[in-house]
Amino acid sequence: MSKILVFGASGQLGQCLKHVAAEMDITDIAFPNETEANILNPEVLQQLFAAHQPEYCINCAAYTAVDKAEDELETARKINKTGVENIAALCKEYDAALIQISTDFIFAGNTPHPLIETDPAEPISVYGLTKLEGEQVISPLTEKYFILRTSWLYSEFANNFVKTMLKLGKERDELKIIADQVGSPTYAIDLASAVLQIIESGSTAYGIYHYSNEGVTSWYDFAQGIFDISKTDVKTFPIRTAEYPTKATRPAYSVMDKSKIKKTFGIEITYWRHSLEKCIAAIAAQNQAE
Image 1 (cartoon, rainbow, N blue to C red):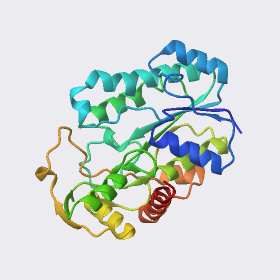
Image 2 (tube, rainbow, N blue to C red):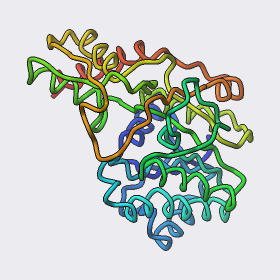
Image 3 (cartoon, helix red, strand yellow):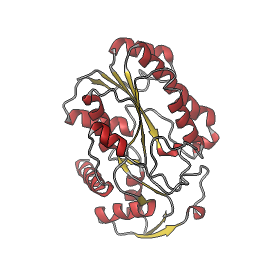
């Protein structure tokens, strides 16, 4: 197995990669902490690359506070653009392939058809803009890269929509949830598996790929699925985005076409509700163990 270096190891996808790597018996993979792997510190990164001599780098590190980013453009840009630039330059120096995790937020979300990789990127938020800038700095620095755009990420690890809904469902009698934003949830365990499958394939089909679970849903229907599967008794009401204003504008439709990643790597993608069932079972198991 190739030597793999993971940035953002303590985040949601980083924890999922650690879990899946253990299941796949992948041992030649390093998960340095944020001090050891500060993507804004070129000297620290240089030491890390020299020590590990990686063949692959997976960058899960990102500024993901979508609303907060509207007031913190420079901070978001440093992490989502400059940090990526630092890693990409070292990947070139050490002849390592970079796997960069990106987002559906690079799209405006105003076209009612599944988005392909070559559709125009028109971010409507600071978060989306800085993630797009992170994509754009890679190709001038290295030709060995995979950019994986994903959406609505959740898992049994870290904070996410599924865990928030399970918590609120127990605390409240009723919830109002946005019903006019449509996309595809992604179980981060599935994404982690796809990333490691790409590495194990040894493929050099570099470029941009879309990955989310199969199917289309709204936040309202996603929440309803969470409550149905977990048998949480809470009354839900669908609302429009205009009734729940947020600082950052979100894409109204960000369903991504996954044909390219499936065809190129032979990856099978699970329907979102089936993956949600697995996640809720994993969360229940965690709660029982505590």
